[in-house]
Amino acid sequence: MKKFLAAALAAISLSLTGCSFGGQNTPTYNVMNEYDFKEMELIQLEPPKDGDTIAVFDTSMGEIRMVLYPEYCPNTVAAFIEKANAGEYNNIDVYGIMGDQYFLSGGKKSEDGTYTGRENDDELIDNECNVNLWPFKGAIMSFSEKPGFSDSRWFICNTEKEALTEDAIQELKDSAAKREDEVEREKLINLFDKFIEVGGLFGAAGTYTVFGQTYEGLDVIEKICAVPVDELNAPKQQVTINSVTISEYTAE
Image (tube, helix red, strand yellow):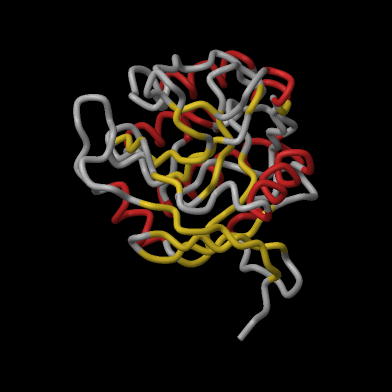
């Protein structure tokens, strides 16, 4: 399994290096080797249900609605809800955009002009990566430059088009087809097919905690990710998160 996952991660990768929003290096931490793929259920591809906890992002470019997953990542979701309810995500900027891959917000600007998500390391949250949650397009993921942890920062996934190609996915499917366990083999192949179908950032899997999934507003994510950036990946025009409101999903 480790050899297979190493090949997978080499085939499709996510880079956060050199961005102006903190000068972070890409963490090397990854827990995919611990996943039991036979148990995998792609819950993000299911429609939201009445009573699900949701977050509504009012941005200067439109509204994004997403389901949160406290049953899989309770500490990450609880921290996000606490900060949202306290207004910490109101009237803040999107301060990093990486091509067609994602946009980053949360945290606050420090004195040196970079962005941080904590006052000290005591505020770090252990990652809560889960085999049922993947960085599909529209997923929200917690962030920290410290491997294995997150803080108050987060990014929302678009699609890494240059890496997430049909040829790259076919390479992964060919590797998965060699797995001896039939259930594991079929679920992995289905996972890779879904990345081609819905898009995402496969290279972020197992490295950052997925704690929510967009069900309305994918077009807004695309618009934000299309904003021109400078050489440090900071947007050239202001994009604002006006508010983040926590609520419950109700079918209309």
